[in-house]
Length: 307
Image (cartoon, rainbow, N blue to C red; front, side, top):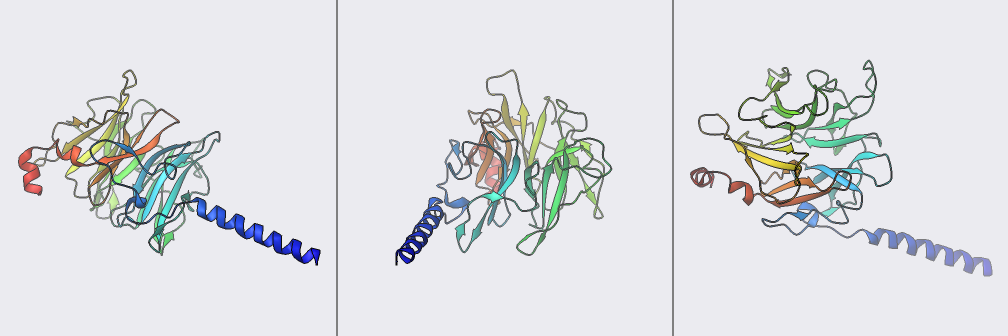
């Protein structure tokens, strides 16, 4: 009798513990992980869920906005991995390590506009390459998940490109890191007849400041947002915005006045919100803000035309 009572109590305690663990993560429904949307003042994105005591940075939503990917460097651990949360039965799952990274050093996820490929940076050794290097890898969509990580080769690797962003026609904007730390600059990789050409440094009006990096290009290639490092200044990382003029040239980049450090930009597919990384090195979070602050940097006649 006593044994039966003991087993029953043990089962009740186990069930209670499991229910408690399940209830610890909130039920998140609706777009953007169920978060209250921001205005023109940057706010931390999903505090306690995405942005935690660890260092979170570089993020993206899938084009259908049913998946969210971001990078987390765990506090006290030498581990940097891509995390993901998915909308399943109208509820967002608790963020977990993306299955394709296998807890290797990985960061800066980007999903192509057609939702079929995900690029990311990796420290995983590639056969035939000497020593540890930072390279671009990709996974292709397979059903509801992703396939095996692959090396796209040249012109992305070895250690040539970092932080991928792409247009609807497959043109890639990235950071040229081939010159080593401190030489970062904005670059483009054009796609012709299904093949990527050589990586090319962007010309004027870009790369006029050292360490221009981490571009976000709109799907229609009508505007670009990118980061600039300014180590000697109080706000040492800022974002710039440039739009394509009617003659096909780019406007002079203008700083987006966010009032805080900002880098690694991403704009939601509906064009309404800008997400970015902010904070001290190793202590950052993901923030977001309304893209109305970007629209204010465009000429009024261009905004009227788009509206």
